[in-house]
Length: 360
Image (tube, rainbow, N blue to C red):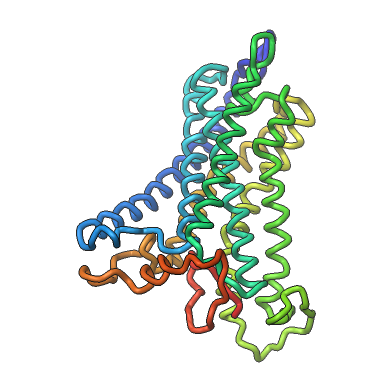
């Protein structure tokens, strides 16, 4: 319950403490899972340092490697922000302070960064399939990701700098089960997170439906004019396995939608009910339940990666390349910066999760 004097502190009931504990445990599971992925990356990088010359140390070989690294970095921040709620469970009270501020900032960075990265994965996948082109420029993708994270950091820094002055409500405060942007700053809530979450949800859904129909054979896209397509009945004799494999990268946006949408809806209702997120007991249970689902997003993404892991330098199970030579894939990728997208030939296997797809 909120303090009778101000909303800078929130006293957790026993039931809320139990629910928040489950959310923290889910976040801890995601934290362990994501750290395992980073250990894989470090292991592969260490192998290259030991076995290859300096010019062949690169572990980022494709644009999707960069996007996946960005996604798991965001998942790491989200998981850390979630696990920090263990302090509130232990003390039975969520209150304004340095720790509260840190949690709010980490949550902003992780959730917004995750939303924008998921949006980029969706757009890259859609362009690769619908336009029949695959992104090849590491430079362009690096710039896009850098600008995305720089924008997220700028919004967080500016929001915390210009708000919460003397006489105003703290910018980061209990909302109520963890710390985030206070209800007195709705525009910053929208700009700093919800705008990107809903854009990502909307575009992911809009991209998934036509690509799913394409994978079934219900949509035929003109090879020369991507805007020219037609609907048809799916041919039962047509082998659509390649098409279905091609849209596997949309598993990440789909996972994001399924894990984030329920919590986002309940959170929106809570803020409409009370500016700082106070809820009835039924809505409180729903929020904590869906919060648990969202906290498991890191686990879901790691499972997706490990079950259909691409044999890439970044995520490969082991190094398959002779110690005296860099892989041909690496050499070709580092000399193909002529454009951000290039037409793909049909002789490449793009079915692995983690590889940019193409319909050609």
